[in-house]
Image 1 (cartoon, rainbow, N blue to C red):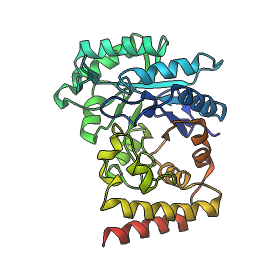
Image 2 (image 1 turned 180 degrees about the vertical axis):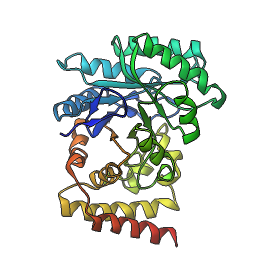
Image 3 (image 1 turned 90 degrees about the horizontal axis):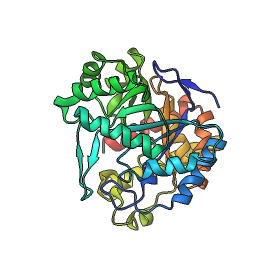
Amino acid sequence: MQMRQLGNSDMRISPLGVGAWAMGGGGWKFAWGPQDDKDSIAAIHKALDAGINWIDTAAVYGLGHSEEVVARALEACSARPYIFTKCSLVWNNQSEISNCLKANSIRREVEASLRRLKVEVIDLYQMHWPSPDEDIEEGWTTMAQLQAEGKVRSLGVSNFNVQQMQRAQAIAPIASLQPPYSLLSREIEESVLPFAQQSHIGVIVYSPMKSGLLSGGMTRERIAAFPPDDFRRRVPDFQEPKLTRNLELVELLRTIGKRNGCTPGEVAIAWTLRHPAVTAAIVGLRSAGQLDGVINATGLRLSQQAVNEIERFLQERESR
C-alpha cells in the first residue's frame, strides 16, 4: 500500500484510515445504534493486517467509549498505528453534548483522551468543530501549547472553512483538515480543497460513502430497520425525495465497480481519492468483514469514462 505524506507533518499514512465513530456504540446523540466491541476490535486488527496505519476517533464518539475500544484493540499489537483523535465536543452527566474551545476545557480533554487511549502522545489532535467561532483562537493557541509540551505530535482541524483555517494558521501551522466529502457532499470543492492544496494542508475526508449509503449494502428495508438511536434516521439523504436518486446512483457505482472488480463503496471512495488535494479517506468499520468491501479502493484508478458517467448522472438528476 503506497503511503502518502500528511500535510506538513512527519507522518506518511495509508490512503485509507479506520474510522471509529460507530465503534462508540449506541445511546448518545450521534450514535449509529448498538455496536459489539468485539466486532470493533476484530475490524481494527484486520485493517492493520491489511496495511492501514492510522485510526481516527474522537473523544465524543460514544462519550469516550470509542477511544477506550481503540486502546483495547491496540493492546495486542506489536506495531502501533498512528492515532488521531479530536477535541471541542464535551458532555455533562446527563450525556448532553455541547461545544467548548476554552483553554481549560481542551486541557481537560487531552488528558482524558491520553488516559482512555493509554498513550503518552496523540499523533494528530484535531479541533472537531470551529464552535463557538469566537473562541477558535483561544482553542487553537491551547492546542499549539499542547504540541510544544509534547502531548500531541501534529495539529489538525475538522469542518473548518477557508477563513477559519486562515485564522488558525496565523497562530500555528495546520497539518491536516478533516471535512465531509463524497459524491453526495461536494461543497468543499469550490474553495476549501483548493486552499488546502495551496497551503500544503493534508486532507483526510470523512464519510466518503455518505455514512454507508453508497457502500452497496444499503437498502430501503435496512434503512427502515435502523435502530431508534441511529443518527442516520435524521439525515435527508436517507429519506425521500433524495433516497430514490441516491439508490439509483449506487446502481451506477455497482455497474462501474463490476468493470473493475470492485464494490460500489470502493468506487465511491476512489472517487474522493482522485482529487489532488485529498490525502486519504476515513472508512468507518463495524466488523472485520466490512473491510473486504472497501480495501480495494486504495488501488482503484477510475477511468475518465467512469468519472464522466457519474457526473452525467448527477447532472441529469439535479436538473429534474
